Length: 84
Image 1 (cartoon, rainbow, N blue to C red):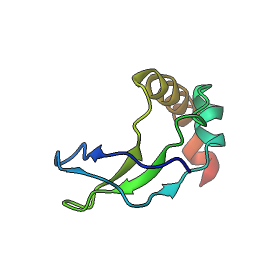
Image 2 (cartoon, helix red, strand yellow; image 1 turned 45 degrees about the horizontal axis):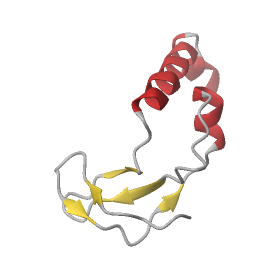
Image 3 (cartoon, rainbow, N blue to C red; image 1 turned 30 degrees about the vertical axis):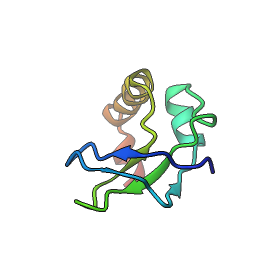
C-alpha cells in the first residue's frame, strides 16, 4: 500500500492524516469502468470526526462516470434480481 497523504472528509470537511486504510479489490472497479486504479492505490479510510468512510485518494471523475454508467445498466437489466 502506498503511504497515505492528508485527506479531507467529503462529508464534514475535516482534514486529517489517515494512519491506516483498508485495501479494496481493484478487479471490480476495473471490470465495470475500464480504469486501472493500481497506480492510485486507493484504500478505504475513516474520518476521525464524523466516522464517514470513503475511498482515498478519490479517483478522477471519469472513473465514476464510467463505473456508474456500467453499474446502472447492469442494475436496470436485472442485476439485483439475479443476485437475489
